[in-house]
Length: 141
Length: 317
Image (cartoon, rainbow over all chains, first blue to last red; front, side):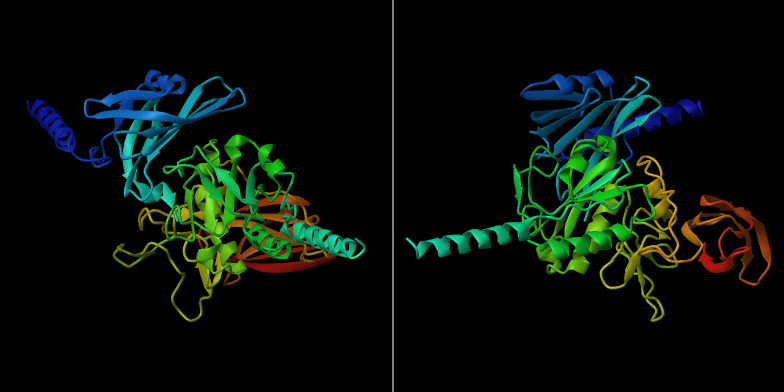
């Protein structure tokens, strides 16, 4: 019974954090310590988008942007740079590389210069997540 | 017409001299290495990177003379002499480097597009593979070659994943994000990832900006994953140009481990500072590693010898 209460409490806390974050500007609309999972299919779509692209990452985190640049470096590496429309012009840089063993790896970051925080794409156990992190750890002078 | 010809000749000659002065010398610090840092003094147009929130950036050439560029280059290269990494001023070397093991440092006078800073870089971008460059703004460094070299080394450190080395009080509270080194009169050393301008700066093992309890070993991070650069395993020639004539050169030291290059076969002994023998063995010509778990963190003395001679060196682990 206690376990059920704890689960419900944690769910409620997480839900309220997400809801309270909705109206705040990027990246304050994404709470610290919350990992937003993103599917590889969604990431893959961004590499083939043209013009405006949208990505619903979570109920409170929708990404709308314009493709700024797309580069292919040999057969194994592609990079796409997207300027956001709904995140104060923050730039999402996403790279996709095919490793020698054939596996595909994505790396990325969503940053706006001089913002205190940014978003980093991380991989854990084959799943990809966006996490908010202090930007001084991503961009340093 | 006769009078015009000398003027034309003088103009052509001056033009040629100016162009020669404007050329960046082609320099490589360790050409065999695949991993590459391109020091771009020639100016650049940058587009399609995270720096381009406000559109294309046109970076002017540094305006530094070839002699100054060479001096700065050597100063920076000295800090990377341990690593299997090539610093170059040659764009072709950069173009042919593995895309996940390269970065470009644009050394340019003006960084107004970013704001008041002497340089900026994306942490870890060396392995991003997306052409994100790092920047050094020479106007903010008073165009002082020493400062430019220090700032460029600092920014390269960031691209290789290093955070700032910081200063904390005894409670672990950050006093300064950028450490200027020990503040006693006997210390003239500062971390390259702190404030590297006013003292002899070097890579250190210390507490980074991510927290007092976290220890950042600069050299180990540069050499290790995800950069996967590693250390040079070259053998030096005793008495050769620019080399010390000692028989053994220490390449890297960490608690419990010493990496070194040896010019020949030697027996060695490792002592602690009180003279207690910690370990002994033989060194082969070339790269060697001495494991000495009993000297986890200490000052040790390495002594090496054969029929032809001997030597010793104090090492701080």
